[in-house]
Length: 178
Image (cartoon, rainbow, N blue to C red; front, side):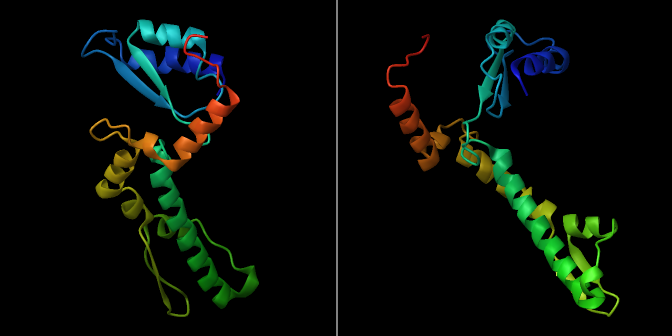
């Protein structure tokens, strides 16, 4: 998403959702985005700040350090892939190489359960939804990113430190406001 696109999204979607947002205690809004082009758009940042909205961008190439969604969706996707592969392999053993997964298989891939094959074999699949998005996993992801108790836990990550050291080496004289 480019700067103008993000600015349009802010103006037409986010801003109307929070009409009472203001730059005063109790009315500020923080919007967390991924890193990418347009996140430092001066027009967007000015308009957002004036209306009490603070944009917090994630680290570039810092997946799973400050991006809690990357952490939980990585788990979700890995379980879905495992379920798909397990179900596909079972069908391949019965139907041969021409096996296909049907739309009816999608619910099994997502929420797991026991799938009875045509030959009577029962294939147990994991529930990717409840495992990946359990309250405990979400809290661990928030803890890792420093959102529970508003800590700076993500700054202690090896990935973050390597990125910050690289930036310091590339731009040693860059200062705030320059």
